[in-house]
Image (tube, rainbow over all chains, first blue to last red; front, side, top):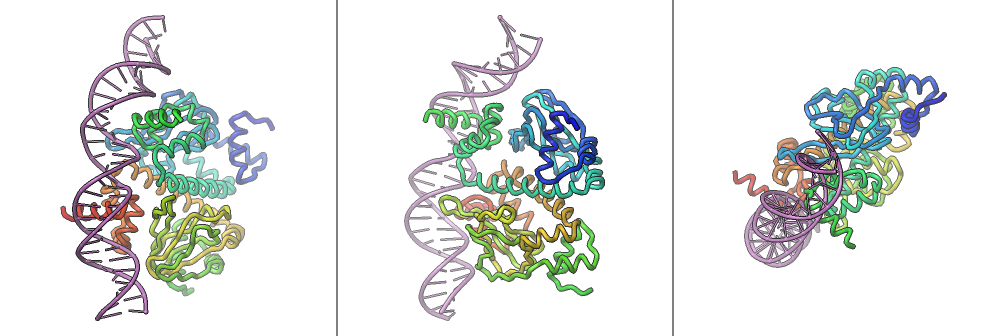
Length: 197
Length: 197
DNA sequence: TAAAAATCTTAAACTAGTTCATTTTTTTTC
DNA sequence: GAAAAAAAATGAACTAGTTTAAGATTTTTA
């Protein structure tokens, strides 16, 4: 069977944890929706009810909230082979407090809430897939937030740069500041300082 | 069938997401180990390989890491009806960087790695249980760390106090500081200030 | 390709939280 | 229940990161 590039990407992602037959692959793919987002367009805005979870096959998006002062706090940059969305809103149907905005023209595969439920009925193996996916996400999330806690902003910057060298070059310094958790001004100082070495 | 108190507690916890037959309940309980920890004793120490995941049926424990300066960062207080352990170490068999210390005499039910794997074979419904448990944990974890980000230490303290009034009275101010992410001295100042109102 | 918009840089004054040192209070232990 | 240990309070000097403001550079748009 011949699959398109984006389908190969998601099937490879899934095959990390479960094996699917050809039939199951086709069934799975039939439950997904292809979505394109232009640079600067929103995939989701605060107040929306998240009706999809997304897998990125191309591009880059930033996921963020605005605090009471209107300052953005970026919780992740989602690039190829990443899953994103607002799980909480997707699960509870409550309005999200997130914005998801493309920073490059992007291509995604989305699964709707209805199809997500259907998936577990049709291919129960996906309970296992999501069990492991959520387990791993939880672990890396906990590790990250626990690790970051005692680092200075400078250390967090160096770590990000080392860990995601490909992402650093695709985003603005301002957005990076929003992710690291500092002001753009201080981000600028840190970068100047680190590069001077 | 007559169950002991701790077993009723864990069965109720599980029944939030899946229904078990009598036989499955008994099978499940047979895979668990009863564990007691005295106040000030460690359930886990950095360097150990986590061979259990725990459900607390009585008492209170603190889960923490030590940063490079030896300062404790408390990631959770686990009381009755909570799950705890180090998922990462449990999953990967790598040494943990956590300490789990009882702050009161405590009673737990533990599931070993072998029995955890066995559980999915014997009662596949548990894939679903853990899928939903991890999904919800992930959501609340993300929500908590995202929400906390723009709050001052004082606001985080007030929030904790409001959200977990029962826990506040069971822990020391010093441990609370380790959870809030500030020094005990500053914690003391905040409490004095807040109570003065 | 010129004008407008957004981002980045630099610097000075400021603040939330730390550090260190000392004293008081509470809890633990024998 | 006295002595020892741990936790809490208080204060002064300090630092990482913020705020505000203004100019320089880069990117976007028409």
